[in-house]
Structures are given as structure tokens and as C-alpha cells.
Length: 107
Image 1 (tube, rainbow, N blue to C red):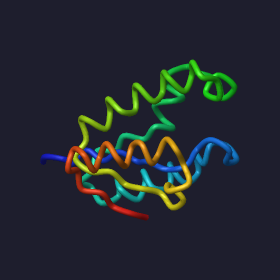
Image 2 (image 1 turned 135 degrees about the vertical axis):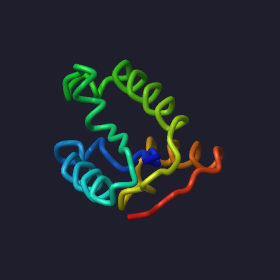
Image 3 (image 1 turned 180 degrees about the vertical axis):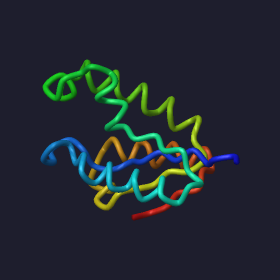
Image 4 (image 1 turned 60 degrees about the horizontal axis):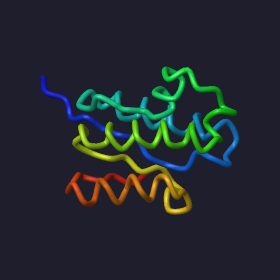
């Protein structure tokens, strides 16, 4: 079966535990549909080895945004978490998805 690759975007910085609970709930919801392979930036962050403190630095932000924007380019859809409009990073990700004519699903 061919899966659609889905990127989850939403607010992280300034939210308790980087909003990981919502990201993982969304990932589970998408995976349960059995048609999506999910790209969860929270998972990518933990795999990167960066600490939460490092994620808050300019250097850390540059690393994760470069990775995330590259990941988005390989995805078919974007799943936007509630509150994405208030997140500078999620707005950038949404703009890229729009430019790439990706399907965008809103929570």
C-alpha cells in the first residue's frame, strides 16, 4: 500500500513541554487511519539529540527549521494543530505547504 506522507505543524515554543502531547495525539490519530506515514517534528527533535534548552537557542532553531522545511518538501499533506496561526514557525511551514500546493488539513 502506498502511504501519504503527513507532516504535523503547530505551536511549540512557549508552550508547556513544547506542545508534545498534542503533536503525539495528532500523530496517533493520523496513523490510526492507516493511510499516513507521519513526520512528527517532536520525534525528529528527540532523535536530533538537542536538549530543550538547545532548542531555544538561535543555533538550535536554525537546525530544526532547516530540517523541518526539508522534511515538508518530501510530504504530501500538512496537518495543522490548533493555534498554528500564533506560531511564527508554523506559519512559515504553512506558507511552504501552500507554495508547494500540498493538501492542508486543519485540526
